[in-house]
View 1 (cartoon, rainbow, N blue to C red):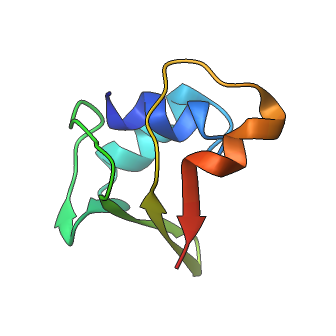
View 2: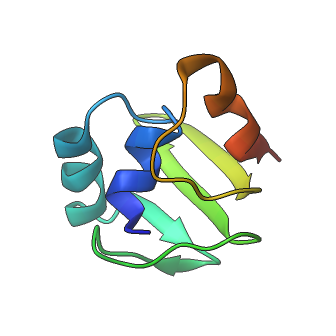
Amino acid sequence: MRLDKFLKVSRIIKRRTVANEACDAGRVMINGKTAKASANVKEGDILEIAFGNKEVKVEILDVQETVKKDDAKELFRYL
């Protein structure tokens, strides 16, 4: 699955366009490497996202095309 779509489906970032802009600005890293929005993500990948002055680090547990809002938290875990 594309990185920008995963960020939206998992609700880490609310909108796909915002996720796309974050990737283009170089604020998202997969396994320690700067990632583009079109990069593929898979289970076990570590994402690091810089939100202004705060940084979020998560591990991808599952990848699904669609998921209900309540179940979105089960796609990743904070590190």
